[in-house]
Figure 1 (tube, rainbow, N blue to C red):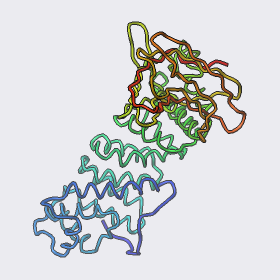
Figure 2: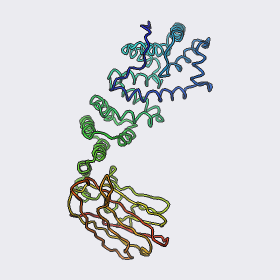
Figure 3: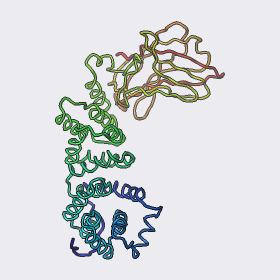
Figure 4: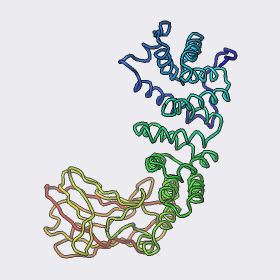
Length: 410
């Protein structure tokens, strides 16, 4: 555990390792706080550095917590304390953890890795050791090993997932990162769904998402890759390629479902699920709600609107090519629509300028077929949104409506 030069150094920050370093500081700080004994803060412990406990085991525990501070520069006194502790307790892991931080300060990454691996061998359940190894492996571009450490931490510390997973998704943009991610995602780790939920919030290159999908599918050819395919769709839609995203959606559906969902997804309101933005988004708020319902073999959208203010009660994205279309729907209302307006509105994305509307305010107790023509322009309308809008009238009144058979035809 000899120490090299003592030149001033911080964490080496390679471009490919930036995500890990960004994640590591708050995570390790969290682990320190969580592991603190007796309510003594890390700052107070650092202030007490010249007065370590006399018991070697307590001294090493103290050092093991203190050196988890990402920005801490290990002092010669702390290094000496670690060596003395190892002499008294030859099976301890803390001295190797301390020595690894010293090697890191000296920019000796291979030695820092080797020392931390020895600390892990002695204490495999320690999350801070595995977090530190994750950082070192990433700096060395050893992504598979880095992700193996991340997997252990995420499986054992679910509370860290909201912090670490968004950072982990940044590896999708790196070819070697995708290769490593595919290897671990193919094993279907416990945090897989949360990873894809976090990835779906990022603006990703669709080609990177497609490459990740291909890699995972190759590793488990008969396995479930719906989340990987969904990520492609979301990346395509976020970049404005709604047509490509729609093709990805349809390719993932059973063949018998593709024709019925080509333009409007689940226009029969059977309660089918689809990745956003193409699946239905229903609202349940103080002034109204909309939800799929079933009466025997009949399925429909059950709408209740209480007035007071305008609200969007249902919405989904479309990917119609330029041209003329007709929007059709069946609607009925037992008591009629005595006040206010209920209509389907079609807007272009992302500007959300309206290009069509289907007013159902004349619905009565018997089913009535409503239809309205609209045109998708050739420019500025690569995607569209279909929105159920409720608008208040002059007098407040409760409106109930049942909608079925919603479709768009050329």
